[in-house]
Image (tube, rainbow, N blue to C red; front, side):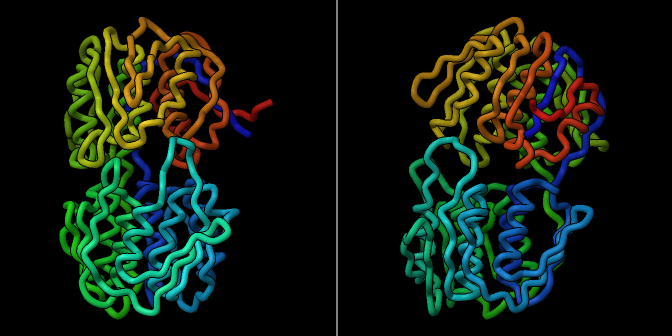
Length: 421
């Protein structure tokens, strides 16, 4: 098992290039299962979660290869409809094979998903959506078993207790492409990754309107063909490097960052005192004055993303004053708080809110990553902490960030990966 060793205090400066968005790549790879011919997917990040998805696809009987961030999928003739527990239990997004396999083979068995431990993440909206278009769904022996002789379009409301669901929207949208008639998804997720999936499906021959809005219409077609497509760059990685610049008093240019995808993050960082400009070279993030505390509430897109909450907390931990972060997507997503406390952070939890009192400096300490974004937050804290920080269990980080230590090193960070004792 690997860990990161970080010597804090270096000011980051230079240019960093983003990788493809994992949260767009995984549903798009699943969508290739709908096609009758080969697909070529570009800008796929070589991450642990991506390799897990490719293994699931191979178990289903699909021919898949990956080289230089390009995945080639040949789905013709696959007949296995079971995605096994051993693979699905490690990654929540693997549940998005449920919709396409059901639509294509009329039967799907997918293990209940796993992934990061960030509080309850039920699959009730997935079941509700697919049931509404004609699927018969049961939970048996830890598996979601779905069957349907013919999926039929319907109007489906997908709003949940904490807003819309990206993966439930993706699952229903994919299944509906081969359903008979029109499906209307109300309270659909509007995230850029959902739009990216819709654009790929349209290139495959699907008829979809309204993606990027809360109401999406899908007119079912008889079949879909393979397509060539390039994944969008990762907006959460962009946000993480923006905070890396902020927390170190740096000056970073982020190539590939789409300002339309990270508007809420840009707004909060500007309120905190950063100068952010969209240039020909990329998005430039520069610290020009002492940081100010800001209050943040996580919300579904286009609100402040829950996947940036932990990183923002790391920044506010060294920002003079009091700031409040309220988590309205996953109210229990605060496992990083105790680890930041080991580094001197002062955070008090009250229900879904974290009250942060900024301290003059953090101190390096051995800390343990609990999930993907918590890992990123601890690295950010280590970049500015006095002394040495050891971040263990970084396999979480490898699920969502490609070569982050190399990218940070090029910007001037003192960080290295090594084997744990």
